[in-house]
Amino acid sequence: MIKVLDHGFVELVDQMGNDDTVVDAARVSYGKGTKSVSDNRTLLRYLMRHGHTSPFEMVEFVFHVKLPLFIARQWVRHRTASLNEVSARYSDMGDVEFYQPDFRLQSKTNKQCSTDERVSEETMDHLTHMYAEVTEASVHAYRDALNAGVAREVARTILPVSMYTEWIWKCDLHNLLNFIEKRSHPNAQYEIIQYANAIYDIIKPIVPYTIEAYEDYRKNSIRLTALECDVLKESVVGTVTLIDTNNKREQDEWISKRKALFVRA
Image (cartoon, rainbow, N blue to C red; front, top):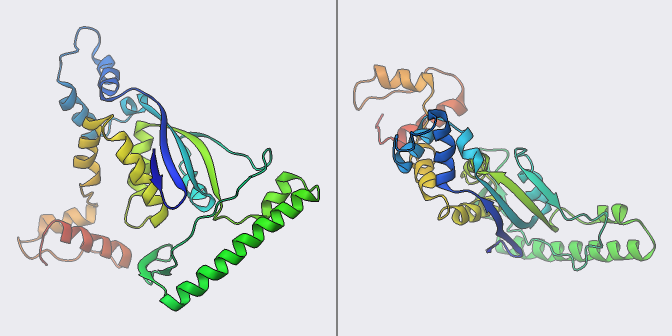
């Protein structure tokens, strides 16, 4: 089990398969008697490099996860998985736990992101105090509703999205890597990045060749668009220019890639 945030965790409760499972599934395409066509690592890297995804779907992981509701709502955007969540319709939520947020400032360049910068110490103290009062009041209201005979499915609406929930989440290796790639990206929300990193740390020793290939061909690689390729083809070494577009975001993405490639404009 890996602890995440203040009250959360990720725990691997079951799995099926490993690197060998991936390559064995791929070798079915060759027919019988061809197991030694290539060694496992070489074949696995070939599959990852050329986007042959179905063999990676033969490996599955089952996790027990405790996470804030607002992160759970982001998480379920990845629909290529199965989950079963604790239900506040069936159960009294017991000792309700809330995530204590770190009040980060809104990014000025990305509408959906925060920055690493925090509010002032004075504002932080004020918001933290107000947050504690609000969450405590919501628990009291929830309890009062249950004691008054209000249905659990209705009483739960009082509780805020910072409340922790738990679920069992099953995902195959291919789609799990997609989840990790999207949710560990610097533009992802800080809180879900911590969960993606925890899952990554859990599966890495189980499928080491897959992770090695993922890091070489996806995580640490750069995908170039046609416009970016045109610039590279037409540029003299050391004089790479901007791409032919008026789209600022697309231009900024190219500049970022250009820096990663250690190319000077």
